[in-house]
Image (cartoon, rainbow, N blue to C red; front, side, top):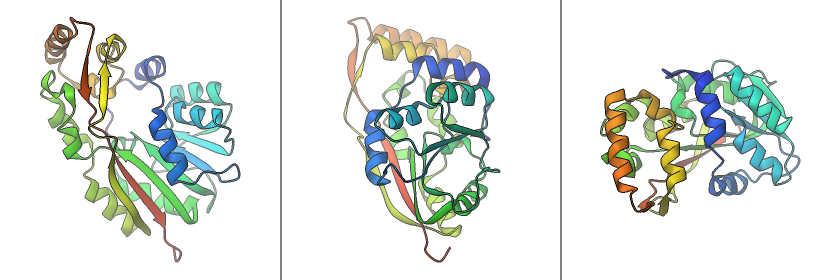
Length: 250
């Protein structure tokens, strides 16, 4: 979808092996989008289908996925047996006024053309449809506990992540209104155990694949030293949640 400099095929394998849906976000999506069995819901940038699978396990079935990666779509379909289409912010291959709600979780930073994204969402969304975006503001990024191990991360992600004001203003220009914009579960306790260390060591988060190898190896060594007692408790940086609604007149 843009802003990608790593091997997507290799990353899809790591992602599905090491990553899982954050159930706190799943509950937030259900609440804020007021999901019912009849509403048509799109997971934009669904990846390997973790969030679609989590929603399906909760009894929802009118779910659809979209992702530009063939490898990720294949895994998502194998998990969910849902409709998973090839598409991006430049092409959403669904008919006009099709969806009641759309969610984008940790994916909007891969999109390099927000105007194209929201113009296309405008087309496929019904009147009053809601958009749920989970991302991170610069304020939250500064609070990531692993910044001390990998000092280049902030600079890299400042370039990858859109500022919240830009996301909101671009959406408004495309006929969406802002319902809410708030931080979620920031500052909560986050146990850092061997499993989490393994996620970082295996570069299960895309950002680590963008670090210089020497910095990554040095950071892992420092991280490993702090794990000598089996782990520790850090503060979770949290998510920035943006809720948009398609305007009636659009």
